[in-house]
Image (cartoon, rainbow, N blue to C red; front, side):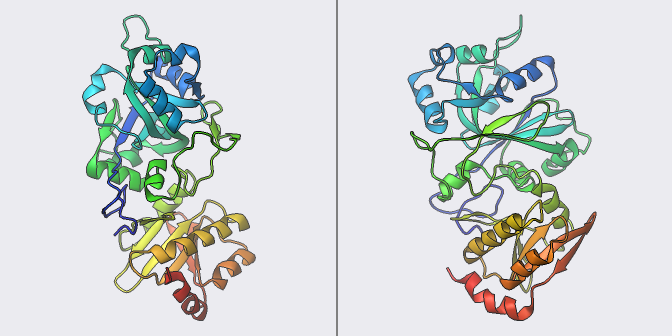
Length: 356
């Protein structure tokens, strides 16, 4: 099913790429200690080149961190010995959901993971009688989120009132359900697809950019990327729209990235790209993504569509229709309207969509 032969919340597998992500559910904003750790190593990046931390790193740990975080800084989280068995399976590219206040507060991607008590106790000095967070992992990406526990529990198959009191490591179907349901796309996945290149030793100059306010400001490095780890605005729109479909929506991955929605009906195949806003730049980006994805579809595409939260202006609608692309926009909760492209234009463009 997956054109680039990879599974990460997407059906299908094949040669060359065998990574399948796990999902860590990490209570991170409940206790006073967790909130302090959040402030110290999630809200802000930490320099691992600084002597007070660097002197505790083994040469291999230092090399791994420098390779995945060539800027010399990273966000970090950890786990106590209670979770040693579960954490022993965690690898680079796994997904971390940071929870608190009855919701997922942020989505992260695991970078380097290792056991090092000295590093852990430097990052998070234990309280008197407390345990060391001796399993340490960096985060390749860290994005604010607003996912209620009820939604996460439903994806996993738990009771809707489940409170997520402790850390979980999800694998297999449960992990795939979360990654697919939240539309998560890791950098590790994109690198294995060839969509992104692994970080270089001498990266291009980076630019700091503030993310949305959450509890306090969070700062991240901008990077060129085809797909963001977690598209916060689009995800609720996609979930709401998919709930209206008579068939199950999927995604497919390709050498140019992952589409938002892939629908295989009995008589047609459709690819849909969602955007959180209706301005020209967003519609144009969605159009270019669709035209890029279409030739890689597992089955020939019959329709392309852009999914929007509101009706677009006439200029944006004409742009889509010029290329035979439909517009689907939200009318009210659970109600969507399709404005189809003219049939003659769609038939004219279909050959171009499907040519590889």
